[in-house]
Image 1 (spheres, rainbow, N blue to C red):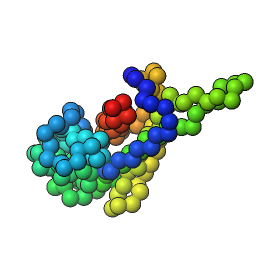
Image 2: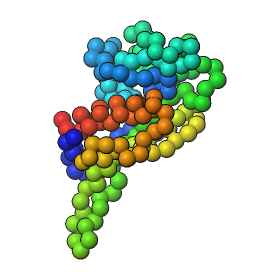
Image 3: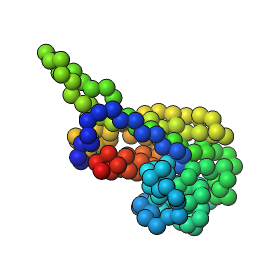
Image 4: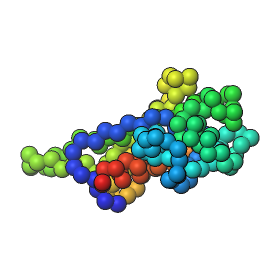
Length: 163
C-alpha cells in the first residue's frame, strides 16, 4: 500500500448505521456530495439487523439510512440496540525521532478512532490502528460490521490523500 504524503492527518466522518455491512462502492448514488459521506463515498451492502440479516436495502434506504447512519429512523433496526450510529476519525500519531538525530520520521501508523452513538450521545468508543507500510491492521474491532466500516472509511481516506 502506498504511503500518503507526509504531514499531519485528521479526517473525521459523519455517521454510518451500525447494522450496515458495506460490500462495494456505490458509484451511482443520489448524494449531492458523496465524498462527505460517513465512509468516504456511497456503499452498497446488506443489513445485519436481527430479522433482516443479509437483506439488501432499497436504494432509498441505502441513501437515507445505511450510508447516512441513523438506525433510529430505519424500520429494520431493532428497538433494543446498543447504538444508532458509528462515527470515525483518522489521524497519524506524532512523528518518531530517530536515536541520535534531531530529524523525525513520519509515523507509518494511522489511528482510527470510532465512536458509537445512541440517541445522539456517545455510547462507546475506541481506537483501531493500521500500519501503512505493512498494509495490515494492528488493532482491529471485535465487531465485523464496525471493522468493515473502518476498512471502507480508511480506503476512502487513503484514496483522497493520494490524489
